[in-house]
Length: 349
Image (cartoon, rainbow, N blue to C red):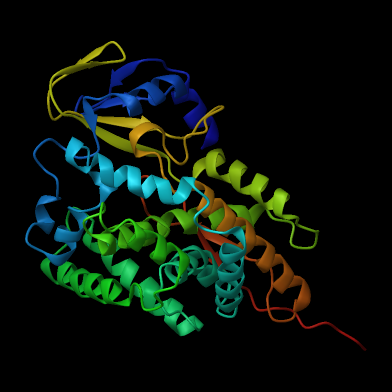
């Protein structure tokens, strides 16, 4: 697969897809320039919310997500959100303490649960959600999974209703512990950020599939029997975020007729931007919509990996190394499906 992406990323400029229905930019410098292009937006022009979510609770929350907004009116809110992550508001000790607690709980339910729960449960705790046991982690994942299903273009009404219920439950759970550091930081910006609950839910959502991809890939290459320093864990995560890449591509839409890397695009046309490939470091995006929580995600991921290794070494009878069953059926992400084999009992005879 990596060879396939390396082949694509060697093609410069912006060129039409084989079926001519969209355009592709794959070479890293072309992708960076496209991500910075002022006429390319994260949503189709005039469609701030996916059509099938109009009128729903999830749709209303989605419309507030700053990562989906590009109008100048929301620029101060984006700056306020970025300030939280750029100014050491979140102390490393708090992040590590929450991560180790959540990762340790998650390991009791096996590798797959640890892979999916560690990041969102930690982010949830930092946002004041009460997550005191693996069952609470499971409920959090169920709500995030309901949202994921509803975001699919062909989601049915029943699926959207389930997502609305999940959205309400998550919004109510946020800030249960008002002194939680990330929640407290958001509230400190509430004069600028119109809907702090919506932005908190956006941060939770962004930690869900991305976290599972990042941790799952890293775990598969981790030598569980060796010593893993924090610096080593961070290096491993950086490697896995780009090779083969947690997320393969993202899309942008021409907000008006424009020129992109030598190609002339009509308003509303989609451009597929490749995020992996040879010497590519775009896993967390670039430009206006670069993930503001990259550093936080890497800190959580590194601590979770250390905790996984420590847990394995302390009780190998309870947890065997993971088995790869394949990958989730997602078009733009590479999320390993992990299984926990039955541990072999040591023979002391």
